[in-house]
Image (cartoon, rainbow, N blue to C red; front, side, top):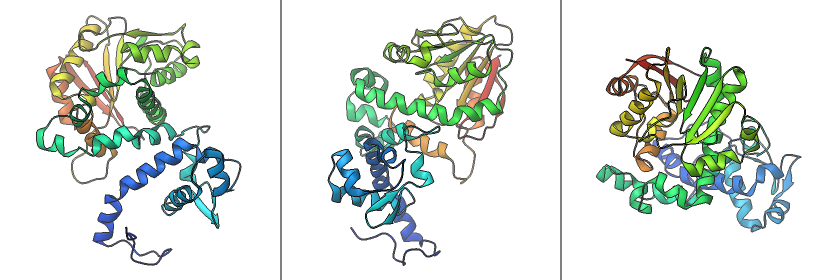
Length: 349
């Protein structure tokens, strides 16, 4: 394949229209390359300084020539840098792929480039033609029914979701005041990363995480959750059937976006039932809030993920308002954060 850029390297010339399309159209090549180096742990191998690709290949049991070419391509877009012939070092972007740094996005990079992910996106035309989720078409069952049958893939996904929680949670804690909540329930809270952070900031608060059985069993094995067992419990529940009535407020991060409106209303109604009679009860959603117009926004691409995988959608403020009303809730405010996800607050109507 010919090179995308037609102008000499290291110039300030902006890509023309065709080059711009080529940069975007070949984006999956960068994605799978990032997946490869993340899974191999290349950034960890470079944390103590630059190394020759021969050393990196030996340490990862890979083909030296092929690994070099992957690293060279990534270095051309600022992920790693080739400081000498076939010798690579970390860049600020590559630092985030280390497993031992705060804010590491290695688990997310592994999930985004996962072969299952690529397989589903390869059939993306299915959802555009039919309106049905692509994952069901490719794998023969809905995504949340599939994961319990594939523990390894489920772990990749759950680790990525924990990673994303750790990316957005500090911004949520900075922007939203959780004071006054006695017990906060995280519905479909996964491995508990969000709730652990909230409980750490609010020491008088208690917490409950509910999720499917296979998720809860994994969460209970984590030392960080075992250390919080005196303040936070993990319960198995199906939020389409019922939500336990043990909390004063409910939070859901990136859950409602998994579902189209009918299913989302069912979940929210069950949350409302669980909070009935509780003074100052709140339902808090941590979600993308889609802005009108052409402004770049990560949520507009997460929306494509929802089309392909569970069949849900990202929503505008007005769409959230209608969703809440249909579930017997009233949207009171939307609290912006410095992250891609904002806090959508509702009370019992």
